[in-house]
Image (tube, rainbow, N blue to C red; front, side, top):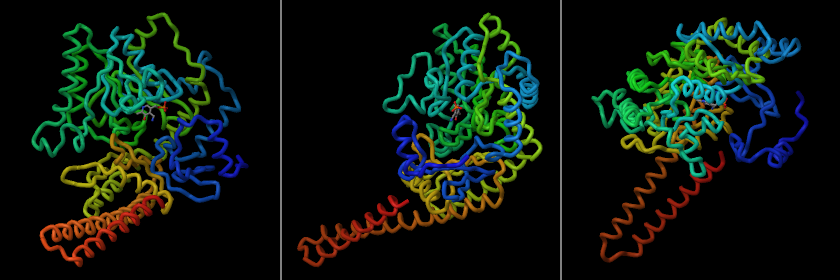
Length: 495
Ligand code: PMP
């Protein structure tokens, strides 16, 4: 499609007609993306950006086979799922064939939020309970029901209040969380992090209420690319099930082979959920999602006598697209690519720790990687400013798109389209090294100036008969320091 508006006009119209609560990436200099192909996006001037963050364009932006499948079905028939259609039943068959045998029934929806909302309904109906356990910093969607279980949103000033039937357990972050490998070097961190869940379950049972569900991303992405410690999910699921609750895996970000070793991220944790929610990558940019569950849970929902109807959920176009995506993942060996390339990328990122002090932790699985930035490795103090500076410089100077997240917004997230290549990984690493090097140099200089100023001030204080010379030197050092900060500030603002 042709782009007829100047970028300035697009911004003007957007400011006027689109709600300002819809934030832009790179707010001070937003990108106008007009085209995508594979792992690249192009702006209105034809500048190419390497996309390291788009886990929606799973098999690559505008994959020709996905486009063809969608266009063909759109030109044939798009109607609702109250008519029989082969694309819908084939979608159900393929999706469930990728799941453990117990998860054999699907409900098709249009988004991750809808999937999680329906999962809560299924769980509450099946258990006849209401209480839900969620993890700190979790995000499960934008609908009222799932905002309630998203501390990522309700913990912010202006966020809604947490209802009393929602219980928040700690995020199992072993680097920056409550129980770290540093504070508890010999402890079973999986057991430590599962204990608060067991405690909630026990309290709920003592009250005679039990729990309806425990919902968690299999690897928490909004929480800052978290890999839970071994045994965590197994212990948590056990406690929840003992309290009569169901276990919901939110695979909206991490499913469909991204983790490389498995098709679903929950499989890396040695658990089988009762309900799995999928979306984003499933449609490669087209809105489609699904809830996959057991026949018993689906039957109990049916037994309510209230039909589930979703106008667009499971329409033939969405299903044709989802079927094309799942076929391409297999045909192009994208899960295998995520495994091999993920290992290469993770190794490259891990080596950054050797050269750059601010890289505190590197973690990941397949093409799901997090780089945590700190101002002090000993104390693991989050460096939010560094993360933002890096995100902007990578885009401005290197045309590489990355993002930052986590409770302190200091974790660089990488979750590129699954067709990401070795050359792409090298391009990212080279650019990122340049940015880290520049940042480190600036930080070292600033620290040296600070130390010199402190030494001069100490010398002046020690010298009872302070001479004009010392004052002059201290003043000069302070002036230098001010200049240095100004320079650093300019550099930060310039990118
Ligand atoms: N769950 C997770 C883990 C997500 O990251 C998101 C979206 N970022 C959602 C659910 C909601 O999905 P959607 O935006 O498609 O409604």
